Length: 305
Image (cartoon, rainbow, N blue to C red; front, side, top):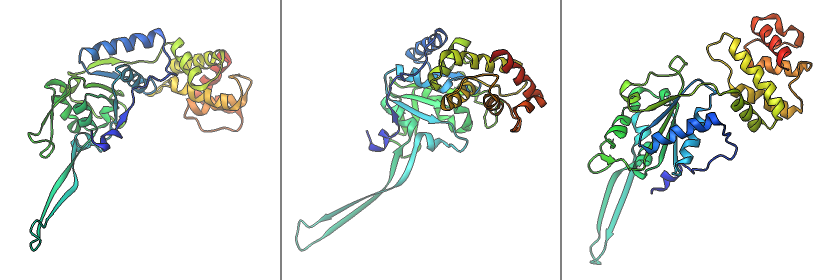
């Protein structure tokens, strides 16, 4: 394998801190069943629902090297497949007859595989995170990979411009809902080739376990905090709702500060204001409730903390 290909790989190490609950186990088991049947898996859901963590955990469970790609609006097909970058110079100096010097030079373009080609060629697991951030035309090359098991290469890629996909190649995709900013609508032909698992917000037990694990706060504190964030999510009116990610943010601040989630602590109340609402900073915690989100937040803090 080319040296530059090695830098694209992640080792399939299962994260010891990955939280396993009955909900997570059920999702992972189904995803692995689809992948073992050679069906690509697509985790789709709102931000903060653990899609990328799930994808990497499932990929690690396959025990094959992982190629990770993050979707990008600037991607074109060569950014995924590869292209001719630079030149290779071969020079031959022949002095078999000492009085005659024969000099030959051969300059050829140098082909370099990009990550998708590396995964297809060697049978690695592809994790294409937020693939709908890439334009649909950049992802067209995936159609033949997932269906005909052929990678169509530009001229110069191989002698016949086609690469047979390794039988152990597997693909996992993640995406946000189409209404999010910066998201392109995936072509129907590609979505039709994927098994889509819609990942929603975790159940309460899973969110508590994740918050405690990722922040290091006590389980009782994590429970109060998660209950607060879940109640705020259920009652607030925003397009992008708070998730377990917001619980972790607040919990990390509490851990670093050495405090607990308490309605009597003005610092804690203002941390919740910053993380959970778009309301401007206030010096006096008593003025938080002057806006509708602040009023809702204050009521929930009084109830849960």
